[in-house]
Figure 1 (cartoon, rainbow over the protein chains, first blue to last red):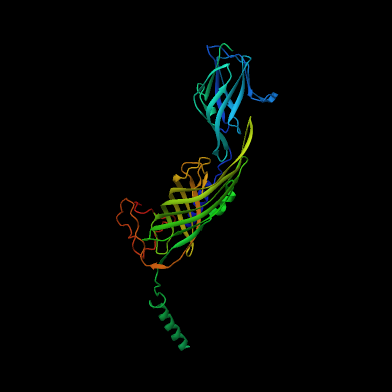
Figure 2 (cartoon, each protein chain N blue to C red; figure 1 turned 45 degrees about the vertical axis):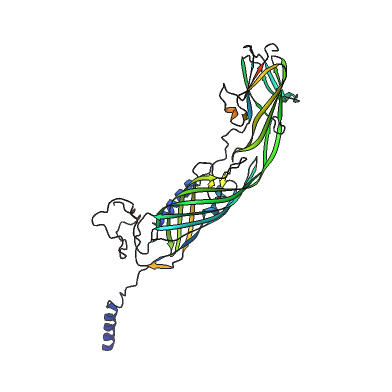
Length: 162
Length: 263
């Protein structure tokens, strides 16, 4: 009995004490999924996006030269300010979009750490943009997993301006 | 010479008489509260990431032979330094419950147990996070979450063994499935370790403990505890389990039979 007790103890102890690993399997990139289209089913031939006041060579977020009716990009939001500005160049025409938001940093898991969670509260944009539609105000690490026809916001450019 | 022979003969007669050499020594069954420490708490720092230290004491008292009301109390300190943050979690916990022995005792001197049991657990702890770092296109931030007190309630299912390795000293292990049913919510960070529960990365955390116990033999009896009936039929001719003189020399050796089950 006592020998069995000892052996079973060792086996179970070894089994239970297996290391739980140190890999992060969750997304920690918080990106706002944004779609772009031009009213009147006009295609977007080129799209360049960078942050407001971010004009260095490495500051370009998107440089897309493939023509499409709808473009879809994940965009990062500011960590320290309560609004984020983007300079959008669709078909060579320049517009600016400001997004107001709140942010809290939340725990993901012990292996992944923390990531910001935003709530979009409003917009401000230039005349080349016709309208902005909000589909989901919550921007979190799972936003990037949205399906192809789903996004946080949709931006519609004026066909006359583009 | 004759005197020597007569003396030897008398000594042999006296020593072979029933009242001399075969004087019956009373066999007692000693029981009493058992107190011990969980040795696995001292091994955990070498087996898991983070600086996790703690101690736990466990105690039980026999009740009607096969039932063991149990009390466990412990403390834990956890300091986990990661690349993007540092998490600290310290607290105290206690569990109360009962274990039920599921094997029959072979003799009055047999105290080895195989048990199943249940526990209710309560933990009060604090957690704080510092050095939270995050970077993206727009720059980086460093943040922290101040210390906050939280508590947790959970239930446990326990299966284990305790064997008497020396007189009144027991070594045992227990496998524990834990069912947290109430944990204080924290909007910033869900506690990923809770004193008394362990890591909460799964819905039903499992834990393993190894205990070393000392029993205070303050009660004595000549009655073998009545087995707990768990269903099944008793076979004709099965030995009387309540007979204190049944020393369990069935010749089968090894593991004992489960209670109430057919053999």
